[in-house]
Image (cartoon, rainbow, N blue to C red; front, top):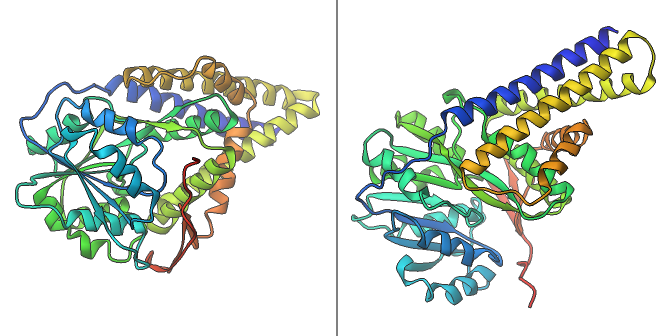
Length: 399
């Protein structure tokens, strides 16, 4: 009975906190309307087939604050991204696309080599710079919301986070959306120094102070390293709740698991304290859930009744948190596929799949190196520096 009580208390507490986090986020989230009278230069490091590039360009063309120009950096002319950008750029003259070939480097993540090559094309008129990823589909207010706090001098760096947008109903889309949307609504204490490179705006003064060629010289990721440097310099960092950007989710379950593991590997490399906290919480949550299922399945006695009551409470709390997050998504302009809510409820009431998926990815991330990212496998030393990279052939789109 003691085990059932402890497991029930822990799991229920985690469920209540997830509901509270989602409710607080929804209450305080305001969609910004102002449009600053400035211009911003966009920088996109890209690789691979970029099947959704046209949709991204459409979203950029629809911004209430039109971008000044768009610098896209690829590693080489052999990268499928090169031809994809060349084919599309002429159709979007308003974006003023400039394609940059960065060259290969094994000293840092290739994404960062691409970033540095694009940054080298900036001139003195580029007062506001935005770094972003190719998989986002930003709302029309995205760029204005990123830049406005910089123009108002309320921040030196502004960022947001993704909001997973399932394309279809599948185990991967249900589990992926459940995990990542829960992360998206969590508070971000300053002590953890969290930034997301998928949507990151900086003033030119902040960009020059950070000195990205030096800061990213041997790094695996840009966001957490930039956050460390910004903290050291005393720069003001703002994360806007409305900047949760629709990001299509159509991976297989294995692809999603590998992505989740890599994200946790990066956290383990650059934020060990946070990784240990997540490791402990997710492991304890899975253990508590598994214990409740086992006790309830055994049947009979007070312990089984406690376990069954706790499992029902977990289902109710999980469904409630999911409903609040869907309300957040609607405010963000994100509409889930028909029937997705039912699929989410089923996954929540199944008790174990979501928790097991996240916990196993976390356990696998205990091994910090090597890290597989796209077509490159990186070896990382104890200080988080890239020491070697092994490349595989590019994957090209069919046809």
